[in-house]
Image (cartoon, rainbow, N blue to C red):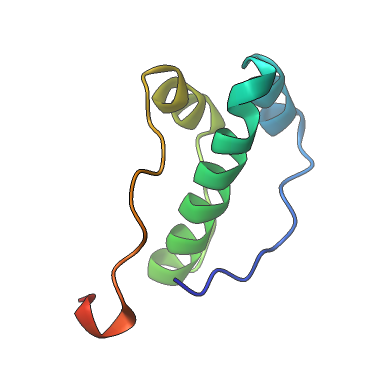
Length: 75
């Protein structure tokens, strides 16, 4: 997918939501935040992220379940 692996945010909002999750779900949250920030910046040139919504998605069962499509199969 070509993520730049920018460091995760160091904001109170990010840490509050991350810390509200069970320890075993935090790596999934980190992955979702990183991916969402990448695409927000790519499409809108600003990485606005609602950490609360992303934490709710993790609580709701979101997990990466497949590898990304090869670049030649993406729009």
